[in-house]
Length: 255
Image 1 (cartoon, rainbow, N blue to C red):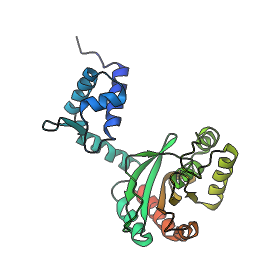
Image 2: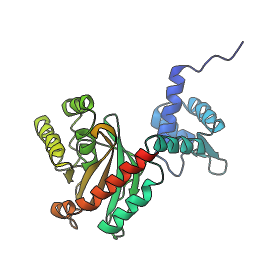
Image 3: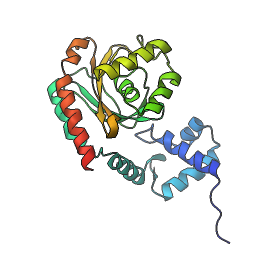
Image 4: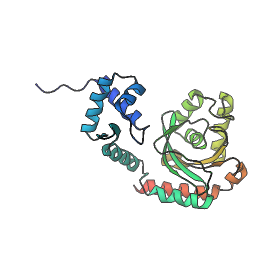
């Protein structure tokens, strides 16, 4: 008799472990991962063994730590190519940072959150550091607002009315009516500003990278410490960001 397919709940548990493993770039022992996801250690060991066997995770005998495997990296690259956001995007972002002298970020919408794809650091000693592969909120970041404002109409309507408006930073919008007006303003002017809304002391400006039908396939942003960059100075970088967004849109269309 052929082996039966794995139970859906076990698949979900394996994916939960794999997702949690992404939070540990230097790897983590099985006991820590089991504690984080709330599984018995024996279950975590069994699932991690399967992930290692299939290349989604790696295991270092010396340190007894698990890390993400190359198969996971391969899949991630395929996702980027499918979205038209392969490694060709990186030089465009680096060029933006060479002009602004600040961090340049690229993100896409993943349900009710944004997912950072690229983060190019600026040359300054004090700088904003993003981390590719991490999720972030939509309502209180410049990229997130853009991804909501230029989402498909049905998705935009849902997000405007239902997105959690958590007080992430000192100036985060937590009023539904204010958020609705903010998204209308973003659509009207074509860009979004987040002024210490996600994190105290950080300002950012974001604008869409359009795919088909004027829908944002991604969002591009410049982020800087508030003490070094005013909102007006951020807006002054719009020409550079606009040209970069157009270049990224062309790259996406060609792939």
